[in-house]
Length: 621
Image (cartoon, rainbow, N blue to C red):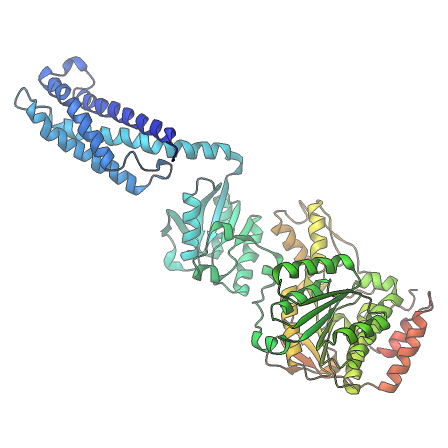
């Protein structure tokens, strides 16, 4: 049995009582206004008809209000439709008076002619106040409760997405945002209004209007904009010190999925100015689907993303290998949740352990191997060069040999731009790994390739997480040198290109990913501080600490003598393999391996003998 709602009954009864009082007040006030509020001046032959007709007037008017749903609407959300109902029903009540009072007139006129207009006007006013005051008081209370949280907003874009966002903000009683102005580069829209908010000009007005309107937050509502265009706008917006948000993409507008809840904060990736990479998904699926894939270093930043993307391409089996149990456990649980159908094997193993690698390859017989396991932290490896060589060089040797012996079809090693003219042991070790890959490709049927790219945003040990922690702690943000630059790419972008390069592989190539334009680390730090809502140097200091051991001001992607070849993807290039004296190379590797086992011995001269472009500080121990 449905429970009766007494709260609604009380509200409607209160409205009826209020309306009765409003009808009486409107009738008498209409006369009083005509006679300048002098009750004694009102003739009886005008007052009597009104009093005699009043009960009938009240009854008919209440019925009219009921017919026009003035007792059924949700007045907290009253709008134009409800206002029209109030006006029409009040005008009809006036017409009822015009005809009804004629039956009660005591002279030529029942009431003065002005009475009807004044009555209708007053009745509209009284009823309007009763209905819209609830919304007004509700909003007033809302603003009072959020007085300190009112957010002045500038919207960039005057298209359909902006219209949807602005309408939602304006109509919401829960939002603390207030749209102050709109920016759009289309001059034809300047001076026009969207939902009552004026389009004040183009992007050249952003900084000026942010100051004029005391803007707290900027919303970029142009889903179709390219990354390069977005970067140009963000470069201006970040000078305002305002919080910046945007819509993730054009697909939301197409799907009608545009709302305030879809807004996201601007991330540092948006300031790279590079459009999303173009990936041939069909070619990746063609060589991954139905295959057994093995990933080393599967718990790391690159390895885990490789596993995520491979899992979406329906491999027959995914074998994840890592020595660090916590990190590989996390990606294991994630994949189990997102891909319950995935045939998954998770193994704890060190690439240094040749016997363990041999057993894993014999047991699982992978078709394709992605070798991402490596020590990558430059300063730490400078302090422990032997460990860098053991893990990176001979770990790669072990995995590659196991792959060759078990008949793996394709082996893809993750390399780094630091392998080019290396100034640190980590980069030199990865260059030796590339040489191992090239020589193994000549010796075995397995197709061995390497993919080289620069820094990835947000990876373990990268500057972005460090900067975020330093900003959260109030600074200082530490930058090694004001002129240091690096190439950057997002982890998903880099991994997508690695998968694409793997599909192109024929054996022996060193694929080089186009990382876009290099980024100055100082600019990265300043932008991240601004995006966090602070002013660089003033609110968050920046401290220059000097170049760390083995660090150089800029990284290179190709050695001069390697040359460059194009692939079907403009963001993937092939470096020409170098000539290697394989017999001598393997002899040098044996000598290097023996030296690594002697703690305290300086192995860098041996590394230099193998990698002639390796430059190091000979005075350092």
